[in-house]
Image (cartoon, rainbow, N blue to C red; front, side):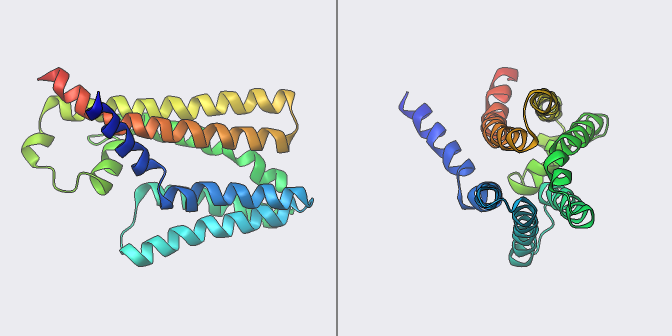
Amino acid sequence: MENTSKINSSILKNILNKDFIVSAIIPVLICLLFNKFNMDTKGIILAGIWSIGVVIFNYIKKREINVLAMITAVFSGIGLIGTIISKNPNFYLLSPIVRDVIYALIFFLSILFKRPLIQIIAEQIYLKNVSEEIKKEKSYRSVWVILTAAWGFLNLSQVIVGVILLHYMSISSYFAIITLYSNISSPLLLAFSIAFPKWYNRKCK
């Protein structure tokens, strides 16, 4: 019981760290703050600049291109440029649905390749020293296929929730709720993604 508590505490520390607060929480707070003063467009532009700036800063600091961060930066850039050109904050507010559709497709399609997307991300961030012998085990790829599919279904669920919210609520309310849903569900699935491989490997042995 004590070991489980320590593992859960370690997982929470890995998720709720400084990087998560800087990259996920602060942009939302910026949008909410500017929304109170009816300055949605400026808030969205500033939040977009902040998000891209965080990615650039991390790259300069670590000298490493992170696949997940790169995808996030691309979508932030598209949303930011689209908002500036159209001068319509709704462009950025609606972008999460398009983003999640593309994310879901990327996750599901990557399963068809030798290394699913979650495997690439995990090996880049957490598993840099995994031996080739372990990588050749059947259970090794299976665990990444399952997790990649799980992330695909998460993004698909966000699309469904987003469409339902848009049907019944205003765009600003939809954006606030879908952002909250994403910021809660993603860390929970991340915690599952950290714990699941150990459990799955024990089960297969």
